[in-house]
Length: 251
Length: 197
Image 1 (cartoon, rainbow over the protein chains, first blue to last red):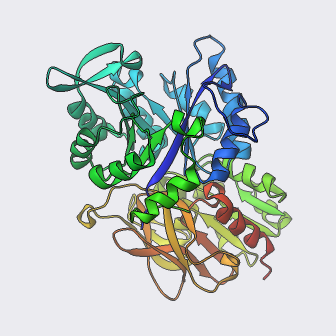
Image 2 (image 1 turned 90 degrees about the vertical axis):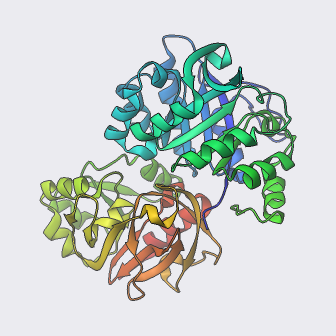
């Protein structure tokens, strides 16, 4: 049986991981390679690196980081942030990234999804969607939730699947940072509509939240950042807890 | 030393990185003469099986590969290439292992592609030496190799039972990505490099 995946997400700026990370035996918490290897060893099934670099040097720095990670890491990883054209994606693929995630560039130019899927296969293309509840509707947002679009989340995801997205990373901006649990209702609804894997994101605060999102929304994977980085949830403990609840995981 | 068939079907950075981590030496196979230089041959592959076969045909290596008697390992689409036929592009393939590559049907009520870690049940085979019965490997594919007990050396379930690994004589294939499958995957690469025929 296919296992449910646990995915730590790492923010990267100028080739260094940011946000506090307090693994005790980490020599350099800002070193993406060391951090990635640590997560892999703990049993993470996959990693997502989100590039928040804003400078012109971003692509070059990112490629170097991706290569360094790919040399060391023996599990798959996704790179997101700042990918706007085929050339960006190709450079990341050649540097060893397994998937790329696109967000605002796809909203601005939905054809990008199709082009990427044609060039590299659907399995390479993750569509990240930031969603927020507005006046009874789920609306797609950009810029970390600050900018609302005219797209309704459910419609956009369905369109993206038709265009060739291979996976959906759905972040609830209402739940993100609250540590009150994932948006199981919306995740379940979206999951019913599509035939590609969906990663739940936003709201993880406890191990129960992971159990809940797998049981209620039957998502394929769950992503979190701070609960892992700050050591509030240890991946081996989480996997055991999920297993106790009869959720298929890799141990 | 391992030779990697360099025919342009997909990126091999992760594969070479895994071999480097394991301290396994490798080189590229571009010509028929190169096949002689190595004790083991890997056929990598990502993407469309029909397109990959076209690229392999263009290298002019097909007959020489089929005639190999040293250990050969096809990975993912590289595994599909050693089968007889793929529904992907209705393509005739190398036909080394007489089984077919088929598409996961929507009627199976599964998500496609099959992506993620899945449990593999290995037979008693040197390629899976030291791999536990519940080991999991990382898969990414929309087409699968039909289960045939004669050639199957490891099976997996996704809507149906399919071959996660096959063998015929010196030819081996794995559908999963050993280079992305943690320690279990690294063990497969190590075991392959230790095969002697």
